[in-house]
Amino acid sequence: MFVKETLLFAGYGWIVDLALLSPPHVLKGEVWRLITYVFLHTGFFHLLFNLFFFYLFAPPLERFYGKVSFVFLLLVTALTGSLAILLFSPYPSVGASGIGYGLLGTYFHFIIHKRGFLDESSKNTVLIFLVIGILSSVIFPNISIMGHLGGFIGGYLFPFLFKRRRRIA
Image (tube, rainbow, N blue to C red):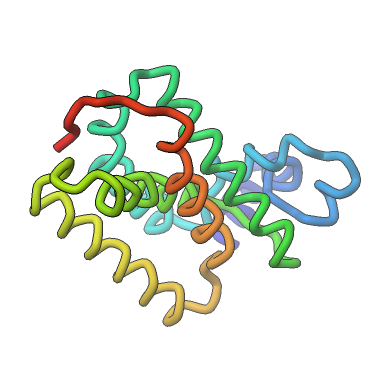
């Protein structure tokens, strides 16, 4: 794992050991891992792709929900991603991709339940990223499909709890 090798070389391997999402460790009571895993990534491109997700999809949702509710959206999608991993995958996991897919899930909710709420360009961008995500989950074996799916479901369900009436795109 790129992060572990890099941090071990730098003397910070203990950070990875304490922060990655590991089902056996969480079951032993190390519940902080349900959130801390999102701060670790397997490499530069993994981090870059997640940052690109945030660059495209986060600002409109933050404006729409406000800072506090948006942070809650991030926490909900991180947790639903980690819970899906815990329930359906025995492997350790890192990365904020579940949050990224959670943001997509929120947009997908708007596409399905709020016709006319998003412009066509925004809808197309969301759908393209969903297709890319599905294809990459099939093509690349090390991707946490469960983390992506859990985050997506959390993001999709989030607007049922937090409603705003402003147009986001």
